Image (cartoon, rainbow, N blue to C red; front, side, top):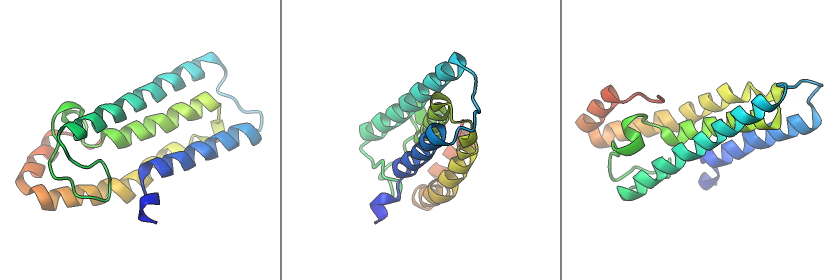
Length: 149
């Protein structure tokens, strides 16, 4: 069951909730038009791009992208020179973009809830593993690169 406890599954759950809310429980609320669809598309595209850049860099460095495994290398190049968690940041942007795209006004609170969940469930345990595994290199990296942006 541990394979179900991965960010894409949680993201899919959030997207499903937002879609259902927009489809069946909109209560007449709306973001108000084309600007929301445009911004939603920009956020969605940006989130996908961030995730793809990060996965490509991790593959290039020959290390795992799975959150419950300890990576064999500390990736500090590419998009990881700007954010320690670009895949998770991409997931948050994807959710925000789809909430706007779906016109799911009442689902906006899912964004901070999802961010909190990612941080507590994945980011903090992952960073603890990295701290134990890479010690001084991690300490330098952590001082140099912010967690999100």
